[in-house]
Amino acid sequence: MNLWRTAVLAIAGQPLVERLVKTYGLRLARRFVAGDTLEEALAVVDRLEADGIHGILDVLGEMVTDEAMARAFAEEIKKTVSAFAERPYPRYVSVKLTQLGLDTATSLAEALLADILALAREKDVFVRIDMEDSPRVDATIGVYRAMRERGFDNVGLVLQAYLKRTEADLEALRPYAPDLRIVKGAYREPPEVAYQDQNTIRERFKALVRKNLEAGNKTAIATHDDVLIDWAKRWTGEAGIPRERFEFQFLYGVRSELQRKTAREGYTTRAYVPFGESWYPYFSRRIAERPENALFVLRGIVKK
Ligand SMILES: Cc1cc2nc3c(=O)[nH]c(=O)nc-3n(C[C@H](O)[C@H](O)[C@H](O)COP(=O)(O)OP(=O)(O)OC[C@H]3O[C@@H](n4cnc5c(N)ncnc54)[C@H](O)[C@@H]3O)c2cc1C
Image 1: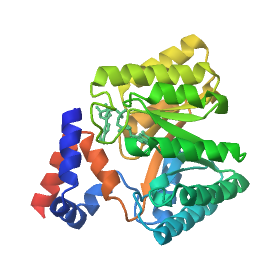
Image 2 (image 1 turned 120 degrees about the vertical axis):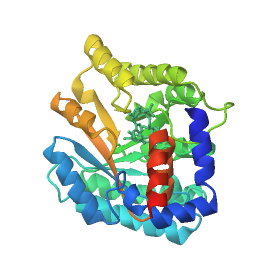
Image 3 (image 1 turned 135 degrees about the horizontal axis):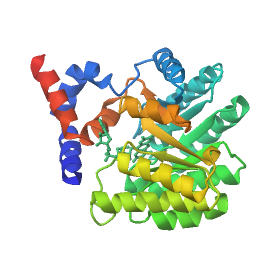
Image 4 (image 1 turned 60 degrees about the horizontal axis):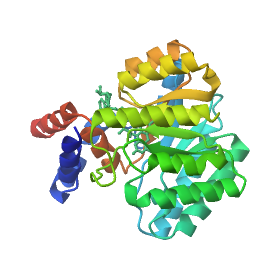
């Protein structure tokens, strides 16, 4: 599976493939992306709410290399925060620090994020910092710490179970009593830094969820894997972890029936709802997660 992901992400990085998929793939991307506009994304959130699922809005965009673009994305995210705040249900957005110029200057990403957090706090919106690829983990954790030290507590971080460093990161973050989202990890990472074997990744995932919940912190369990979801339901019940302290998170367009079932069972359930024009890298990661998805894209392109 990891070999498959490595291969798909390498192919997706080829300019010709990117051109083909961008030309013919938009309709296909709609399975995972709510649309180009904020209005379309809010309409998806409204539909999810009807099924008892809360939305996490994500303005698509990452690996920005100039300051003007980072500032433009920060404005879009603030617009999203303000518009979401008009809705009567729980509000939550995800951001990527490379979208806010992390690769240009950490100080730029920090300043733009602080600005977003200040508005979000005023509007009662929670902000999750997504975790990107391994070379950016130190900087991402550094920005999270800086925000907490500035007094923001409407912010959480993501930790990836496939990275060998993650348990040490979780330990080091203990003083912040962090609200964490635990995921398996979506990027192409070498064996030196990341476990490649599914069973090991699952065991690391469980250990991270257990540790953060046992420390008394809030934890989002973000996976579509039945083995992990069933384990989490069973273990939290046995350990007496109150339901207000954990939730299940999913990606829009992936295992929708499972999402509705989790909500019906009374667990807090959220779906990550990405929108915007910069959908290609996000879409490539979703394709890399499942061989059937690549066939679906290929068939779509050939038909055109
Ligand atoms: C809310 C949320 C936020 C996330 N944030 C981050 C982040 O910040 N950083 C990061 O690195 N990763 C993030 N991820 C992605 C994560 O790391 C995994 O790549 C992704 O969730 C797939 O792994 P899985 O745990 O669902 O297990 P898998 O073993 O990949 O999948 C389990 C089952 O789910 C279904 N499934 C999974 N993915 C797909 C798909 N794309 N299409 C169709 N079916 C699928 C299949 O039935 C599969 O058998 C996030 C995931 C979620 C749900």
